[in-house]
Image: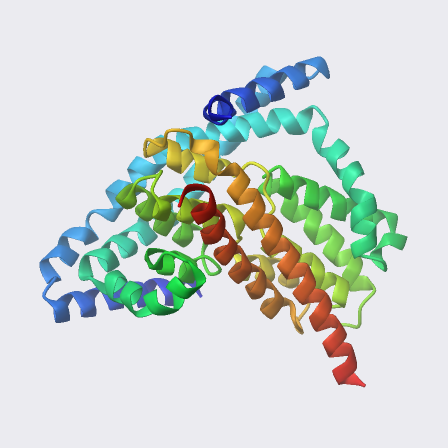
Length: 173
Length: 195
């Protein structure tokens, strides 16, 4: 099991490549084209990331994040959520790059294999930029009355956060 | 929207820093973030390119279509009204399949196509139950391989960057389930309240 999880990346890449070749597709040019597309993604996230990482590092240095963490700690500890992730949970529904900035900062500050680092990673991986998705979809089809879509989506996010913290505690706590 | 969030973050940092005597640290930190963003783009960015390439291989070998065929009957149960329209159902299952594989760029156009099919069936300007459900499913991430976050972990020296996979699956499955349950519950409540 340990070998399997540390070899995960290699196994995934190799098996997708083999499956693609067996189905007769030109896997190497697909790989190269996809990587080029990835470069465009990186170019697109760099500018907002500059803005948001600047803000996150300023907030961290000012002590505001620590104050916020202390404020949220009593409620969050009852739910089993590490209070350090407060800023990540606040940014998550609002901004994809903001959440990425907050999670990256948490992972590098606490270490990727720490409980806080893992919780941040699982939170980021199991939720979406809710408000952005809502705006894009309803905007595209001209819906003004979104009825209960927002509360339901926020409930899904909260469930994701609690479950992220609980599963990390369960697996590695 | 983002402007407000960003300005709030900056203002809070400046005011809090000045009040708590951390002013100098805030000043230094203001020039620190950009460098970290560059580091991110070189280390994590290269891995984003790698995974984006691997996912393109997956897409071109027809695995998205295969997955979307598998999903269709399940989605038909969740979307009884849309299930009569095969074009909307096709777009919907392609949307969910692309989301599962982490193909964000492919998921959104398909999702919007499904949404416009559903919007045609609903009263003008108001979201129908099924349209709300579609959006809720799209706001709850259901990615099988969270490659970006694994890349962030790898660049910070994680021992096994993908060892969080089972935890991510449990948390996403729970979050989607909660979203669907709350959606169905609120749909029923709204119907009762209208009467």
